[in-house]
Amino acid sequence: GPDMTLDTVFWIASMTKAVTTTAAMQMVEQGKLSLDAPAGDTLPELRAPQVLEGFDASGAPRLRPAKRPITLRQLLTHTAGFSYDIWNADIGRYEKYAHLPELITCKNDALKTPLVFDPGERWQYGTNIDFAGKMVERVSGQRLEEYFHEHIFGPLGMADTSFRLSPAQRSRLVSMHARQPDGSFKPVPFEMPQDPEFYMGGGGLYSTAPDYLRFTQVFLHQGSFNGARVLRPETVAEMERNQIGEINVVKLKTVQPQSSADAEFFPGMVKKWGLGFMINTEAAPTGRGAGSLAWAGLANTYFWIDPSKRVTGVIMMQFLPFADPGALQAFAGFEKAVYQAQQSA
Image (cartoon, rainbow, N blue to C red):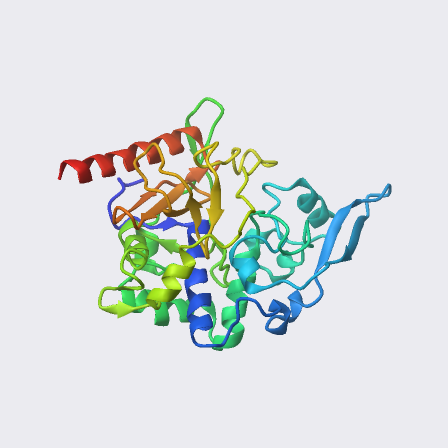
């Protein structure tokens, strides 16, 4: 395809999560959502969660009621008990047993997976933010596409970020690729459903690098950027704080190697989760300060926000598997170069 430019459009996948979390926190500020009330009070499908305890001899799932209700805080910190089939074989097995559609179809039935542990007991990356997005829709009365444009993208001047691709965006869209065993790349067909049953708050957005940097700068400026206040300063401070106590973020061990390699940022370092972001508890070898915020998207898009050094960066690629060693090397090299440039400035 054509060479990449600054306005090239990428599927940003799980970089959507921080945006959905921001919308949820706007609803918390307005008193329309509560971080610690049962999420089932807002979203009936979360009212009676079931925990998957394995499968019986016939292959049928063994389910039991969860010991406690799910909260929005647990959803926003990936401690509610939901998982993804990419990193959890039991969830994949359950989806096949129950004939659930794949998550990428954006069909509501795709979210009918059980928990893999009781809410609040550990950290496990999963479909949590899709439910948070549905909670925002329920209390705002708007679908996520409209809500994001009105309350986040419009005010921040993010004209190229959306769930639905305009003809202009489509003309600048990068194609998806898959890394081949010999190291080469092969184009593969991919597009998020454009008329989905649910807008995927956990991974549905398309964006550009400059657009996403407008969003990340909100967190360097106590909740406002481009003359628009998106969040209160005290909300941003809360989002940047460890929300999971003694629980740690753990390595994502792949069970679908075509979609993701094993994924862990800064192996050996203790990582925590704020509201919407991973937090590194120590300074990183790249130059990233302790207490920075970061996450990524499945097709190798990455960002970080470093409040201590007033730095934020975004790097966009568009291929699978996630956490490809070459992609991680490119990200680390870019990040180091940013800090070196800052030091020599």
